[in-house]
Image (cartoon, rainbow, N blue to C red):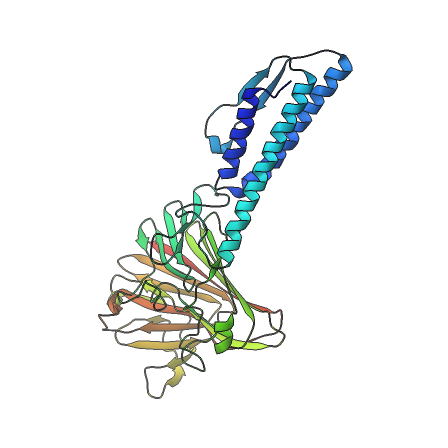
Length: 407
């Protein structure tokens, strides 16, 4: 007795559908379960037929799947099969399902391994992992530089692998981040705009200006990057150790939540001795006109370093509200954790909520520089200017969330 043709077709179709699905995690869970259920069904039917000495007609139901939309469950009659036919059919379907599971697992691991090497191994524009309602994470490779597109409802963000730089955050079509018109988007220079990383050095110092994190391509961690979330990793390599002789691991998480964009930067010491660093998010925020915007925070009375003076002048903040009317480069020390609000009369307000290790705020604008587009952005940077010491296996973390309130 041979396996019924319709059963072969069903088994092959279901297995291939799940194996080829972008939702690899679902395929890995469903296919083994399908194999077990098929085997139990046929073994049970065979056992009853053997005990009762009778042949019977059974019905196999293929339930409704979320990936099949509104298609109803399908009931397929099996008209008095022999016990040998039933057992062989079950084994056939089970083997097909397990083979499909192996294909899905192999594809998932290959994709993750490729991305961990800095390669773009996912199909362009595809979304992976589970989608939480209307939220998705997609890898886009059609541009010169690959980036991850995050979507949640009417909100979206763009995160480049180069420098792990968030270059766009939109809510209902309103853009809250700025990229300078002189920015190079071909990989020849760090991206001048969005939320660039300054690590392991902020500003000038022993190594290159603002460190190397913004110059390097970060690795996309595919498995946790789903449902409107992107997680990127940077580890030490020969190039970084030539500049900064330490073993480390950075993890940057960007997540679209309802009505806000959340970020978290973790720095882990994977070496055998302490190291120190400074860091910042050199954040560029979009404004309609720099002359009409106000920046509000706990600035009054705070220790302020005015770097436009020569030499730089240490003084106290004079007011909680800052307006830009000249070239500005000011550091307000230890006013975080806390909130800074950027008010734009044409767009609304943007709350910049910083926590964890971020303790300082840097305000920067090259006022009057048309080439940089200075009238359309202001930098309100979450920073850690003082040296941070991290012990072996220790982890430092800074969080920065953007909460827009559009007009």
